[in-house]
Length: 250
Image (cartoon, rainbow, N blue to C red; front, top):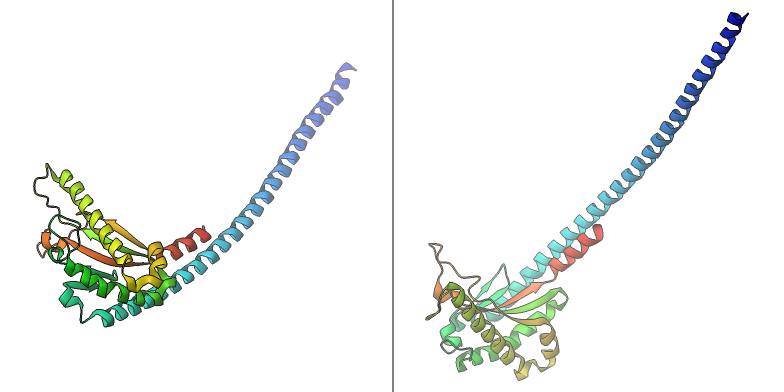
């Protein structure tokens, strides 16, 4: 009797054991299904986000391409206007116009400044009296595309009596800064630019660059004479517009 009573108990224990395993497996299946659904939902949203991002990138790319086209056209037009205006004057001023940088470079410092000084010669003052008002008149057509007009002063790496190359660099830095400030100061006092002076004050800067960007000769060595120069350089706002587009996309 005791033996026969044992079997139902064992069967009940076995039945309870397998039911608990079954319940556990059912629970795990529910969790797995829940995780799978969540994952699929997440993947779906990620896919949507990626598709939206791809669309933003494509739109950004189209805008950048449009800006590049507009910038190239503006640069070409400005270059042509400057060439037409100054083609007769650049040779006698010892100056040149760079198509890529839209920079008018005055290349003979011995004519423009007193030796080792930031004082403008009478000859350079006369050149600026003629050049600067006409220069501003041309720029007026492109005000919406101009970020800055830079007056840059450049020197050679030479400095007689300097203790070393670094000492020469900083002495030339001081000289180049003083010279560009002198040029800007004089330009802003020219009577013919009175109506444009406010714009000029806000948008024209003086930048002394010492010997950081020398002019090289055919052998790849510094040309001290050509490295000493003053440049009027136009910087467009194309870069700023492209950066804004990229920030919007991100």
